[in-house]
Amino acid sequence: MREVKSKVLMLTVALFAVVFLASSIAPALATTYPVTYVEITKAGGDCHVEVPGQPKISMMIQKFDRSSDHGVRERLWIGLYNPVVNAYAIVAVLTDGSDSDFFKEVWANPAMPGGGQLVAANTVVKPWDITICRIGKLIIACWTKPIEGVLPAPLKTALGIESWTLPPGVLILKGYGEVDTAVSTIGPLPSGYTVTMEPNNYAAKGTFFCPSWRFCGPVSDARISTQTVMTVHHD
Image (tube, rainbow, N blue to C red; front, side, top):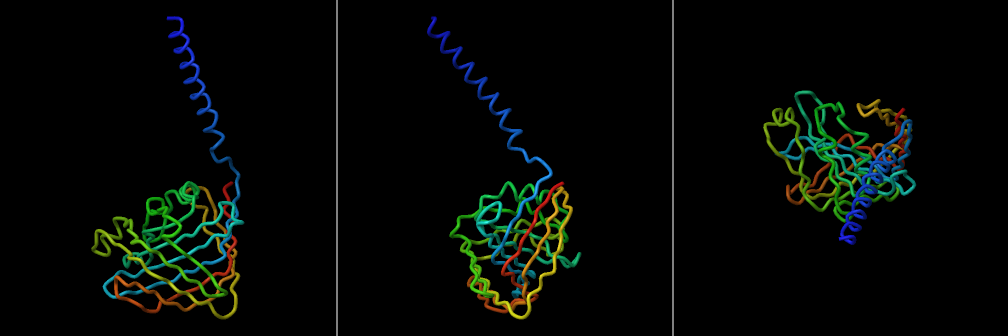
């Protein structure tokens, strides 16, 4: 009987310790403001694509350098054009990085033109599912799995569709001309964060290739970045 009581006492002490540690660790893991992160991309680009029988598509690619505060990762943003508000709604964001919690914290409940649900649209994939590389001013991005869009209700109504999927494909962008270093700022966002971007941008031409759609054609409004320093700050 004494041995049983001893085991019960030990179990009670252990449970108390777990509760105490959990309550102590949680505040330590919470973000303390003010805070500033620096994220650096060594390859980036964006463009618009028009494929027959499909909504107008926007694409943005980012390859983050290991010197970034959240490390190496690649990200692909996909948007669909909402003709009612004359803006693109972000419907999918793919990343092979481990910064999902940081992404959700920064982009929580954003007031995005055209609608869009960035947190819901963010999907973490395997490193081999998305590849972005740069050689000089040439940037190539490819993804090997279909990308399911998360469509906000206004976009469904505007396009008359309930769902949309981007098949595997390849995007090639080639920069040219003089560098554009104009600084831009987004925010303050509803999350309280402000994102300031200092880029090395170039105008670009490009091609989008999608075997499932039997499409290989030019893109429009394209540009590439050989480096962008993003400062993400919260007061």
